[in-house]
Length: 208
Image 1 (tube, helix red, strand yellow):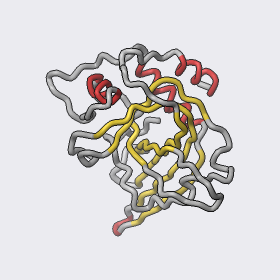
Image 2 (cartoon, one colour; image 1 turned 180 degrees about the vertical axis):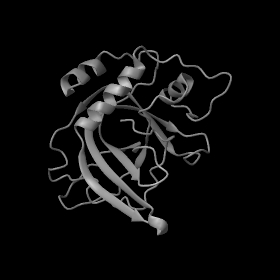
Image 3 (cartoon, helix red, strand yellow; image 1 turned 120 degrees about the horizontal axis):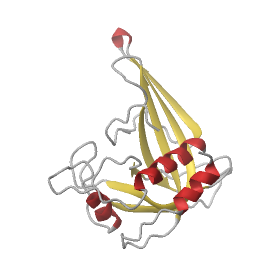
């Protein structure tokens, strides 16, 4: 699916059932792709996001606030709704009350958004690690600059993330901001992700 078609699909998605009024902002979506040479079954993919900082000087650098972005549908719709209402969300918790009443075409919406992110990303870092017995790991970090809206809230569980961490779900239309990372505002290009704990979701083997 090309970018134009993906954008049209995103425009058709309705989130009118969630009442939180959100402001359109500019973001960097970070994709972490991890490959291992052993004990692996494909590429593991994780998504994070950071809001653009306002820079007054060309050489100024502010440590970005990076938080989880859920682009895979593995949670209940009540957790999505809670976050979009500004309430605490427990995306990894499944109970007898878990529902899957997502907005119309929600799964297709996430698929198209992942494709939009993938097709417009820039590689910003490659991290290689080696251990004894021949174990190797490579993590490639990509950045995609976008404009859109996010449902943001506090994480209420204790799996993968820390209770109280900020998490987010995309909402509505997203569009690509072109040539941002090549301008004087090169946010995140100077960030070293070598020690960053990017494992924020269940392994999504081989999925984009």
